Length: 319
Image 1 (cartoon, rainbow, N blue to C red):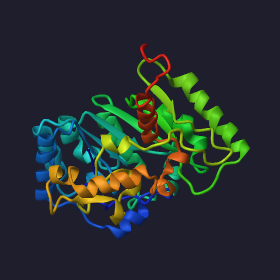
Image 2: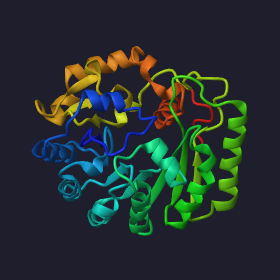
Image 3: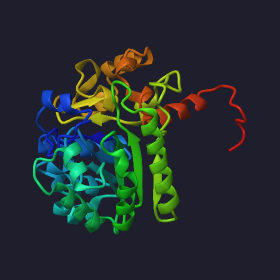
């Protein structure tokens, strides 16, 4: 289960896919409701919790209490964060979290300020202070969004991530409505990516790319026929609504229900959820899905399901 505890954020990233959602759904999950949801999730058989955004989870007023509640419920927890407040909460993070993924997206303070637009000066330095505090002691990784303003700093960020105890850096192409790279940029992106792999990757550090230089012909058709990935994940947003996936968050027509009004079990087994899943099977949400522009983890899940659903699997008796 993925939870957006708040839609507030101390950064205003220029590529934020949740900007409109955050403006239309301001606020946070009330403390008692969040705690009740965690207890219900454990009872329902949820396997793990990811705190993310929405906004920035570490600005949630009760973040430390929430993390301890998740741990005490027996659920592993990871956080996706912009990293600025990691140092502030380092003790509880080390006490409770299985992993931490930090969206840095820059190799220098100037580029970070340009693209993340933090609310306070010195954010880039505070991000790396937090990474140094937890990186050597926790499975910690860096996400780097490839954008025309950032790709020239890919290897710089990768080197710094390794030097400060991170286990990986993962490069992701920015999600955009139209093509924003030219052929020369793609060659530079590939050169930076391959150089980082050659010089930095070893048994302690990985350099990961998500088909980053394979978009010059524009959006691709999704590599599967049906979306089934939503069966693996529930997305609980700061407004208390439960959704099928990140792409549908904030859309009333795709809300399974509210945790302020019903329990998780009631929502998950409701007729409303069944009807929404039927709509998803009919591909009514395909036009809002970014899976065709930036190869997402949902695409990986769906390709797996596509294979598993084949009656006559190629080499189906072999591992």
